[in-house]
Image (cartoon, rainbow, N blue to C red; front, side, top):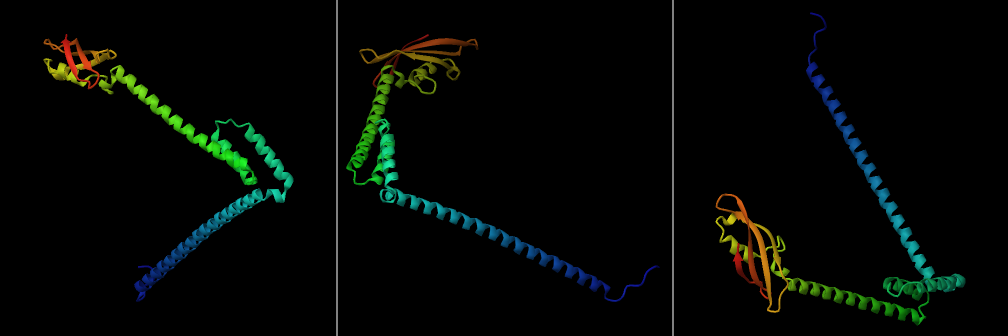
Amino acid sequence: MCGEPLGAGWAEAVRERNRQAAEAARLAEEKGAVTLKRSKRKKRLFWVLAATIVAALFIGSGIYGDYRLRNLKEIDPAAYQNRINALEAQVAKVLASEFDENIRLYKELQNLNPENNRYAEKISYYREQKTAAAKAAKAKKVAAEAAAAAEKKRNGFHCLSSWDGSHREVQTYVEKRMREPDSIEHIETRITPVNETGKHTLIMRYRAKNGFGGMSGGVAIATINNADCSAAVVSIE
């Protein structure tokens, strides 16, 4: 045999080296995880601070802008008067029906010159006009819906199915008189406008299986009561 014989305790030595290597790898992994966690925390902190600074600058800019606008007359009288003139010229071109734009411009004028009562009166006026216009539009919509519903009822459409345009009572009546009720197929239903007696004439076209196993067409005629949509079938062909 070649090689030197293994000394006593070699197996324990190998196990110990493996244990030390595994422990070193574990510690390295933990150190890497801690480093990564710290890096992520620093990045989050950086973005939070950046967002806070941007927000502070934005708020500060807005506060300064509001202050300057409110005190423009004292800070820069010429700029103040130019701004007043520009807004007056701008609002003069706005249509009276553009309530929100008129209100916006007169509010800006009022902020510049709170002592000018005309601006407050204009704001109040356009707010009232906006409210009145909204009420008028709502009333017009309600009237249009009522007129449409009345026209629908005059034409008898309120008595027909919104799904297939059939009259359920008439169709059921016809089905019960068919050789095979389940075979009936609704083709179309037509209805006349209400007459002076409050009635409609309804014509339903359908087809169903005949005695020979084929499909035959048919027509049912009925009188419909406008008030409650009740039906009286006059004939079935």
